[in-house]
Image (cartoon, rainbow, N blue to C red; front, side, top):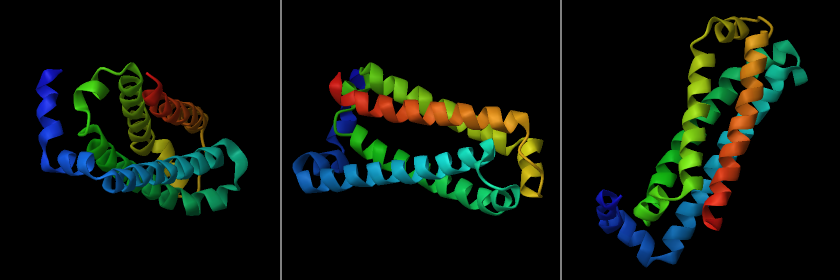
Length: 156
């Protein structure tokens, strides 16, 4: 993992290491972006599980999906900034690796849903299919696990 060490010498990493305020702000932005990501995904998944009328689900699904997309992009950007401060340590942390795997699994789940016929049918007024409900349940479990793994990083 020594090949990652030069990341800690980049101007961004050096600025975050040198300024506790800058690090604090990037960390806060990371947490807020995770909140946007998880909050919108949870609302959408609960709606897919039947906790929202179909007409309302059809109206809010595209918005919640785009909001989750913005959250994941911001979380990745801020996460990369934070990673740059101690790249070799993070790359050897089992919780960090679990978090990355879970994020990849969550994004894969989103891709499978959004490129499927059931999602397109939902957007034009159809009811959530059994497959969408299974994906929604998996999504909730995956993203909660990713958040737990993220918190676990500091304890290992």
